[in-house]
Length: 271
Ligand SMILES: Nc1ncnc2c1ncn2[C@@H]1O[C@H](COP(=O)(O)OP(=O)(O)OP(=O)(O)O)[C@@H](O)[C@H]1O
Image: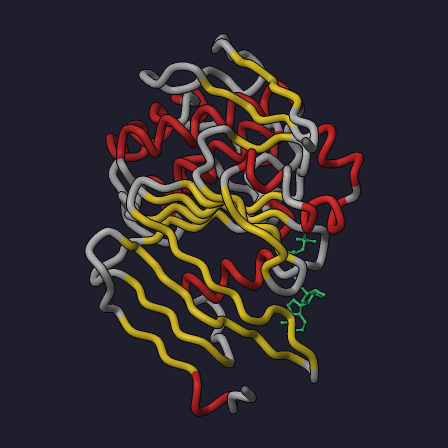
């Protein structure tokens, strides 16, 4: 059925008790083409949903539409009433050469006192970085600072666009562990974007594979066994997908390059 753009867009703030955000039939049309189309996506409280897909497959566009940064042309979005969103955009879209301290980065767009800033940095494992200039941070430290900034909003929903970008492999595992801990501690929902097909958190409840529209979805194990996943990313990707297991909750993960958690890397193969 052809839906006209003006007729079919609806956005409301009502929704079922546990769902933080719910999108149905979402489509974004720009410059004469559909960037994404027919996207159904729900994030519940305490749920981690990971969007994966090749470059240009519409992951950022979908996330921006979900949180209201861009307007969808078709489809409906319901957000829980009073929903607080913590958004970490792609690191690439942030100018790290600005002469800012971490404290200033965290208080640029909202007032937070020193105690709150210290608490947020503590929560992401970098309490020592408050007075450090942003341009001196490592990739992993920068991502943690951005995460702390999002946490200051006490979000119900965390939206993280490629939070491990520019981070080495141990730092990547530590960041995923940290995100899992934050979810466990605060019970927020998490919408995570990744083009890294090799490491997906075992804590991810739902993986959604995008390629302009949804190719497949399910648990990490179900998705990696789905023929649509192999046809989208190639059989080799399915063979090497590592499901990262973060074994314990509790305190914040260590420094991005200095973590001490137990990890398994299960290598799943298509049956
Ligand atoms: N405002 C816009 N106007 C026109 N085209 C756009 C706009 N924003 C994004 N696009 C295009 O939409 C497509 C999807 O982009 P998007 O950034 O959502 O993909 P992505 O999956 O997040 O990619 P990546 O992994 O490279 O970040 C791309 O082809 C991009 O060039």
